[in-house]
Picture (cartoon, rainbow, N blue to C red):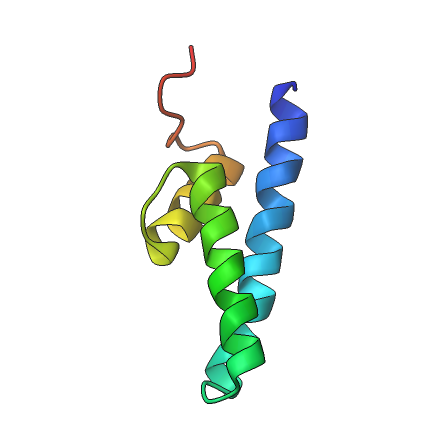
Length: 74
């Protein structure tokens, strides 16, 4: 997978995370929404190598801006 494909993949995962985050914040008591948001956090964390959703989102945004965050890629 080349760098542009990786970027597109990270961007898609970040958009998915943000979409479910907004729904979760609007309806935190909804178990279905909470579960889907949790799954989006897991996916974004796996894609970025981070352990927390907030850090994963920050890392994804940095990568998309091209300001670093790439660990071990040379």
